[in-house]
Length: 239
Image (cartoon, rainbow, N blue to C red; front, side):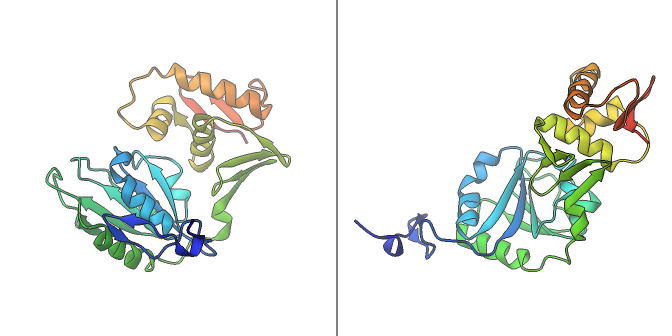
């Protein structure tokens, strides 16, 4: 039986020098935005084997994106989609658009890579761009606070008074959207921030998630400490 040092992984028939079970003492973070992430599985696997942390999102409107610190953002436009990155998301990261026959307009404000292409060629370009990341955001951007509530943005965890609060992804996104927005948010604005403009559910679904979030935070809607209701409009962070 081969030992760890003798094992290697084959991609497209070519062996790579990265050992199975290799220890990664340093990492860089790459965000991949694609409506069909399974189509990029081989590329993602190769990047992870090269000690990159890879985060996958289906669209560029994820509210957490502007808060993440990344070395590179990859946007898949080979399906004809035109996801545009928020300014905040691209301000501290290089970004790369994957383009193909179905791409309707090649972006002029970022790097491009024709996809599919050779895996080694793609990885070489990604490694080059990831090494050119701009100065990262302040350390405080990784943790947000609301009174005795703390959000660890990097790990997507929420704590109240030091105790962890277990939230669903929708509840987490909802809290993050409210906390990072100024003023009052309408129910429609909240729905678009969390699910995109293609969401067809009723606005009462936001009320349901708000109610659940309040219960988990121990927030009294009649005398709110965290989330206040603005009647006839929507919600805001309580003063």
